[in-house]
Length: 554
Ligand SMILES: Nc1ncnc2c1ncn2[C@@H]1O[C@H](COP(=O)(O)OP(=O)(O)OP(=O)(O)O)[C@@H](O)[C@H]1O
Ligand SMILES: CCCCCCCCCCCCC/C=C/[C@@H](O)[C@H](CO)NC(=O)CCCCC
Ligand SMILES: [Ca+2]
Image (cartoon, rainbow, N blue to C red; front, side, top):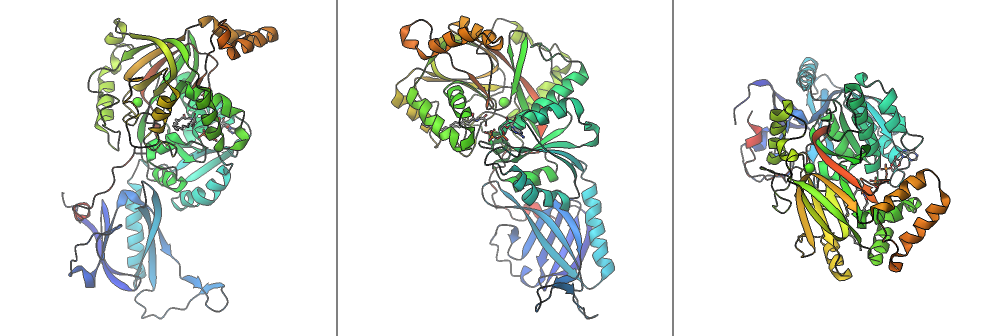
């Protein structure tokens, strides 16, 4: 590694031991002077070697001059402690930085350096602050929306106690809106919010809340660019503002699959350090009507039915999915229809290749450069214009399109473990009619390490576009009838849904679109590569301490 030139080097005290402390534009390092020479070589977490520590400047959250207030022994009250002029630790500054703890979780740790010279102390604080000011990817001003009713209804508490204090430590200014109704955040972003004031938008809630923010931002961007969302062929404009997710929902799969955990402090730290992770978005249309966007799961059959049932049990909180999951599994419904898709071509891998999307993913990087090359070409590529659609008819227990892994605490490797966050494709998983036992085997593989695609009744394709038409398309007229309030017909359609055995009309499922029920069953889906950016970096590979000094060249 190229040696960076030193900005500062001083002997400072940490917990009354003398350290050699050095700063260059990339690394802050401190080395215990007495034990540095012994070189035990054993690497411990947070330390590159016993007694030697380093923190990348880009992972420093803040630096603060420490005042001398300490709690008074007798009264417990805080007061100024008189210092002797000879005290070598009279002045101090504290550096707050990211520390990696368990399983992709980050923590805001700190270290206090003491010195006898006030001007030296100030010089350190000022120099570190100057280095932090050079990190232009960090947000200074954020618009925060809190859903007080998501998940276990702890969104506000999580934000106030765990997130707001570290935002303020990092000198990030925030405008906070606690939502008062569903779609409040979406509508505010779409029409009212003065977005020029902010470097990013943060949602505190679950996948549904993220979906609101994403819809608000994407629609606002298209409106301002004059792009018609109802047209499937149009190239959508990427959004300028990054989105941060503070997880406080029931599934939190978007946070989990982009950060690796559903820990609010970890997410807040990714926002503060200004991470950036591009993400694909699927647009969902019914004929010439735009319905919704999806970033995680579009599921028909099993996941559509779980969601439909669980919406009636919202009061149960996250447990509703377990109850509805078991109920839906026992009902063992299958649905007939036709799936057509455009397979992804080129170096985009396959859903079964075990090339998991991780920080700096090469597959997603390649898609990003391909996107730049084709920027001035027609919005629908040559391959897409040619008749290369694959058509599959059948009876399905589930049709799932996973645009990302959909990893979440319920399913740590997700619905499609090798799906990529930003490759411009979605993994289309078709689970054909099979026995209950086989389906259970498949579902259980979502929760362990076994390959859920290794079954004769499961097929999986990496695609750029797909369409679904239910076998009895006329059922879709139910939707129009429902919308126009024809109650007699609604009654009739209800009977037909519940009486597949009578043979008059097989039932249909609903599409689960990132946790929202779609109003149509016949849909057309197109993936838009890297339309938004998140304050995240993808899941980091687990750290290996092979060469403890490699990161610490100073
Ligand atoms: N103030 C509010 N009152 C009622 N509903 C709201 C309010 N604010 C947001 N919502 C809606 O609540 C729904 C669920 O929220 P959220 O996604 O935060 O939690 P969740 O559904 O428990 O978690 P997940 O989506 O991860 O399963 C969202 O679809 C959102 O539109
Ligand atoms: C017999 C029981 C078998 C249990 C099998 C467990 C398999 C778990 C897989 C979980 C996949 C989650 C996919 C994510 C979907 C989200 O966009 C969506 C919104 O939050 N969540 C759900 O629809 C909630 C979906 C919850 C499903 C249980
Ligand atoms: Ca993708």
